Length: 182
Image 1: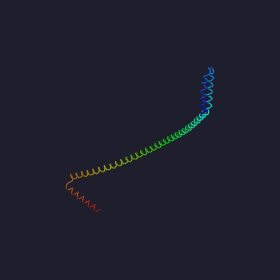
Image 2: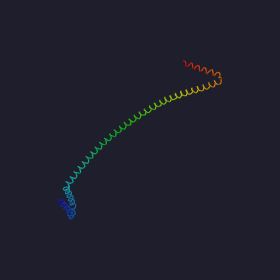
Image 3: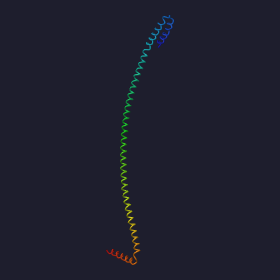
Image 4: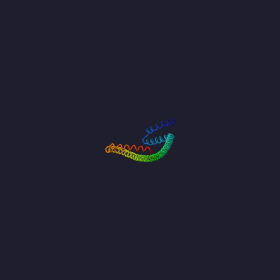
C-alpha cells in the first residue's frame, strides 16, 4: 500500500515537470504520462480487476444456473398443474355424467311411481264408484219396497173391507201355523 501511495505521488509530480518544459515537448509528456498511468494501473490493478471479473463471472454463471434450475422447476410444476387440471376436468365430467344418469334414474322412478299411483287411484275410484252404485241401487230398492208396501197398504185399506180383513188375517195365521209344523 505504501508503494502505491509513493508511486501515485510521483505520478502527480510528473505533469508539473512537463508543464515547465517547453511547448513542443508538452505533447510528448502527455503521451508519456498517459502511458505511465496505464502501466501503473495495469501493474497494480490487474490482479484485483481480474479477480473481480472472475468473481463476477462465477456469480453470473451461478445466477444463470440457478435461474435455469428455477425455470426448469417452474416448467415441471406447470406441467404437473396442467395434468392435475386435466384430471380434475375429467373427474368433473365423470361426476356430471354420473349425476345426469342418477337424475334420469330418479326421474324414471318418480314417473313409474306416479303412474302406479294413478292406476291405483283409477282402480280405487272405480271400486268406489261400483260401491256407491251398489249402495244407491240397494237404497233405491228399499225405497221402492217401502213405497210399494205403503201403496199396497193404502190400496188395501181403500178396497178391502172389514170382512176381507178378517178373512186375510185368518189365512195369514193359518199359513204361519202350517209353516211351524213343517
